[in-house]
Image (cartoon, rainbow, N blue to C red; front, side, top):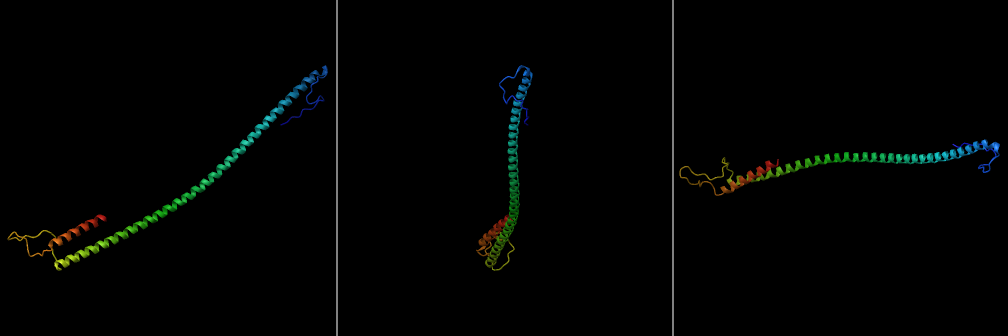
Length: 179
């Protein structure tokens, strides 16, 4: 704010002193000139402070706008990453389901192969025993009751059958331990 002080005809910066009767008037005038200089200085200082405040506000506004833009970008990126995470979780669940199905199929195939091998071994045992059904599962040679000697009525391939039965038992143990 600038205050205009009327010029009393003595000039902007009077250096001459007016006549005596105007001495009081001269003091008032000098006082007014001094106040005018102080007011002008205050107004200039106020203008500078106002200008600095406006610059600071503009700078703060720019910072706020930049922060808002960054916030929006981060929120957008967060949403995008959240969607990717959900997609990956879905894909992971589907893959786990497929892997479980594949493992089940492989187990079935393995069991089928083991069953086929067991059937081949049973067929070999039947061929070796001449299709006779033995009710004994003991793989030790029988001793006749009367003479404490080994029963010679059994063929010599009895140890082979015992080995095949032991192999079959081992396969069954492995099979049931896999389940």
